[in-house]
Length: 339
Image 1 (cartoon, rainbow, N blue to C red):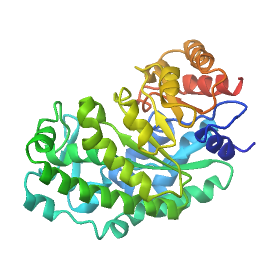
Image 2: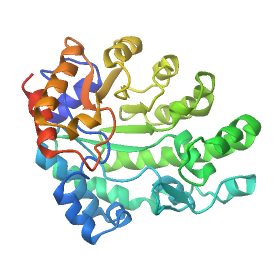
Image 3: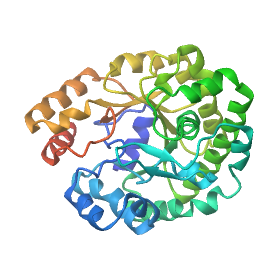
């Protein structure tokens, strides 16, 4: 069975001989070949140059033989394409060019030029699709409308998301105007990714976990559901970081697969979601900073905990840190293949 077929079968909760594996976000940044590229190119150059983005995407696939590749990009390309540029703060974190605070700010945001302004992502995907052929799956991605809104309203990275939450509670009409625009832009962006050859799309709801159970639906899940409904051509993975207690919303939004953080029991989430929704995850990313021996043990523990379950894509519970060890990553992949 080809890696691509195994991956898609697992997403559909069908039987596979062993769980497919890929690594959620920034899989290459612990690799010397990636660091070599960074000596000569900024992060934005890597994202916006299709040949470089393709190379970074393929580096972990070539090294580890993973079953799927996720395109190298950034969730904030959507606000940027709408007219709100972003940069990186010297002390760490994201800085947006301005804060979305009023109706006039929302009016400044454009949706009509999304596909033109993000054509470099389409070009990158086509290059990766050609490299992968039909052997391995290709995953596109983007941020959830709520997660993108937090950066846009807060003006960058935030610790408490107070301005985004206050807009939701105090000015729901303005909040929904903003979310309508972000959702429309996301739909156009994801349609472009499908046309470029992706097999699956992942939505990162990185800050959905800061919402209360009663606000998760109207502030985040309902907007993701609109996107998923608008693009039936491919299955969606939703990663609701720290939001797995919102099981009813996760079941109803239409995603084929739910990404699970390492702080949550993977099998319990799978059982709560039911037989028709798969799960991906959820090894603690710190494990691949330790030793190959410990990595094998923890990988085996997770595999054993999911024994007999259809619908499991093995993954870290989040991305690879720059401190991830190559020998640990290889030990993880080898242990999965030994199943």
